[in-house]
Image 1 (spheres, rainbow, N blue to C red):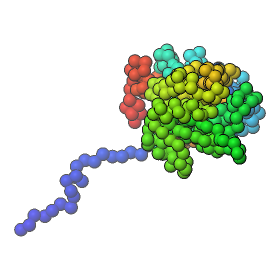
Image 2: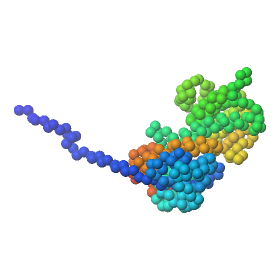
Image 3: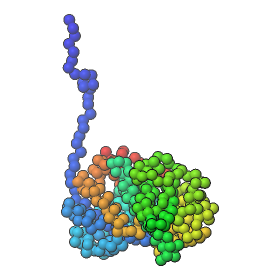
Image 4: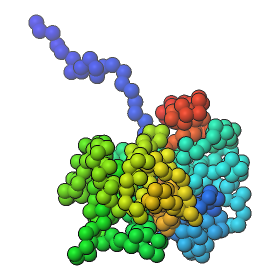
Length: 399
């Protein structure tokens, strides 16, 4: 007589874990946008159109008077979009959510209420240990927008600002070459019968890509150098055309720099940008040629680079004009503000739809990647290693 078989498998008979649905409940946000106080910072986090979208979704926005002036947005523009306007800085910083471009100063953190949410840049290399200690004492939850990732794993804010910096580097070079700015009178455009302007771009990342697009668009002859064959190959594919590319061979780079009218440095490193162009190479460049060192915010990739600012952006060394302003996107504050606003708005709406930041962090891994403080607990390993601080994994705190 054959044994009867159970209709259930062994795994089906074992106790199974139960999956509970996390309830999403829409919440109303109250966002404060203070006026930026950092040197030459003219951008603002939200454009009036973004404020209008948030207000129409039931959220409140409190804007410090004059916060949008640097980006050519008036208080009236924001008021008509539904924002509340105040001249009281303390009132803005007392909002449950603070939205800024630059990280707040220690004095500004003192104005923030305990348990508030701060969304701003972190700019790790410009911070001091006391900054994080102050955040911890206030039990603040903080997100760095340069660490936020999208569904493709890219960093949308960094890419957006890199696109602006890449395009801007070529526009700035074109200005500096003109006679109006005591340049050598060369025009970027490919004029019939006139040899095109020679441009060398060091770095094939996002900044390099958009510098190449801009330079080609106005008729320049472009040469791109990068140590990554993959980046050079991807750049060619994105452009859909063949351009001169090379790895960082000193002989080839020196030869290209001797011939070029403009050299753009767009290389980034982990802690600082590597110096790829020596002073000897700069000495051999043509008199009146222009260097735009976009990498200057990480130390610069030209040995002759020194930090400048928007008021005094250039200096001359070995007959070569150097432009070494760290915050290039702030030069085009309205465009940069709208670009950043386009990224922030969907995230803020998402946070509202999930009923607050905590639920949004559960559902969005990319947003969670931007978290570096959670109720006063440091959750970012890079920050912890840099300043020798204790940290906890965000996944163990948010479940």
